[in-house]
Length: 456
Ligand code: MYA
Image 1 (tube, rainbow, N blue to C red):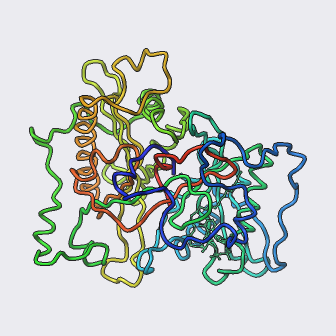
Image 2 (image 1 turned 45 degrees about the horizontal axis):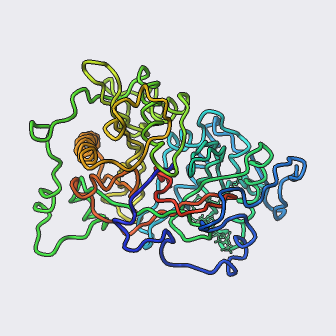
Image 3 (image 1 turned 180 degrees about the vertical axis):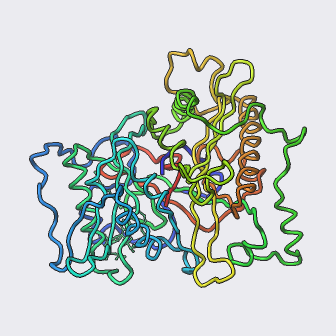
């Protein structure tokens, strides 16, 4: 998950970015009160909370574990080890509040998310039972990520997939996993990290709200994801959620097509310029763009010339200007199904999640030749409506793609100017919030926008 600006203030009444529910005082957090995390503080300067960078100061040996367990570096190139992580997450990872939906990551997704360019095998941290079948009972993963935050560039790790087997909960294993991955990052010269979560922990720097665009209404109602609306039949609800066809009044941008290898440089430049407008954003190299948007398409596993839908993780589209052949727009989403716990008719809910997008409509006309590398977020009124119009057309087009590839719902967050299309494209507010954190980095102000893609 990565970050960008958002407009939470328009969506979350009085949001101070301090999330929802379950809020404890720092002192009540036995573990987190010992860690370098802090709320943004007016008047302070951005910088590390713990400035230690001397590698000699970091322990070279792993933290102790109870003797029946052992640390492992999970080898995600090994199909069985990848399967062990998939199974652990599939049965024990994030659930919604009433435990009816649980993320169901595919092996392809896990490999894609945890093996970006420059990944460290030692940051794929597992805990196995030391004897017998050596079951994998806990995991935490980190990957390298460069971010810009308040105009500072940081080499961070992005931490995700923290999971402890249900039978080992509340035994304070999570803090040990977090400290161990911290030690391993520190040893590689990385002292800051980003992470997100639905729960409220100390040091929130921003909060986004989830919005959902229904696609398969009968199934969403059947699984309890959507509530039937009083006085409205399911057919009527489905009709109201129809996705408009490509037509003269709702035209797909001319030159809209699936991203290809030849677009990597163009997409990298466009994303860099578009994301520079936000207070918190990742910086993608070309290799990272190639990996993030073009890999994970189920290579080699084709049906009728098309990648197998179940194996595909990411869908990425560009708009190529028919005259200049330049890439002017970009939009993407990823697939993250959930298990519908105990539902035999619909065991899986197929959810698409909005990922990165960009449009040059938000940039100065001369952005390609400009010597500026950071473009302002504030748009003049005329430009704002051009951006809104274009984002709506792009989102409509991607919604059509997600419908034709069989998704049941399309999720997005309040970030990256999604306020332009959330209501026009009939996204409905969800109950979930996603909180954003930076480990060991004090900010002088709240981030008006969160780490974007929210892969958990
Ligand atoms: S977010 C997804 C988290 N995973 C899930 O929700 C899956 C289902 N749940 C579980 O597997 C367990 O409940 C987990 C906790 C493992 C979450 N992030 O061991 P415990 C604190 C951080 O007795 P358990 C994601 O993956 C809790 O406040 N801390 O608890 C991003 C308490 O501390 P304190 C959390 O329930 C992860 C302590 O743990 C979280 O058995 C980013 C209790 O430990 C949480 N989501 O296990 C991690 N949940 O007493 C931080 C609970 O102080 C990375 N806790 O309140 C930091 C950067 C590290 C790298 C730094 C490099 C420089």
